[in-house]
Length: 73
Image 1: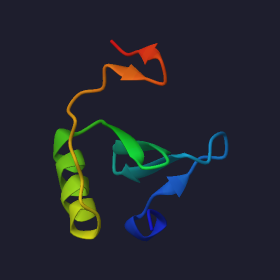
Image 2 (image 1 turned 135 degrees about the horizontal axis):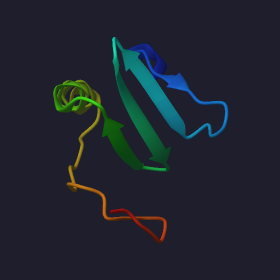
Image 3 (image 1 turned 120 degrees about the horizontal axis):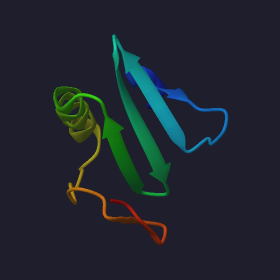
């Protein structure tokens, strides 16, 4: 499904996907039914969320502060 949207899976971790769009990048870290998104452009992430929300119901929990017992600052 993510490959249909132009994402490629990393070789180092098959739960991490990325998409290059010109000089920008979107990175997704997926675990079971959770996904963390990082991007170099806020516009890109909003477009991606809109695309995904057409397929799946998304819940936006805001900025990440903790991930797998790791504090993100």
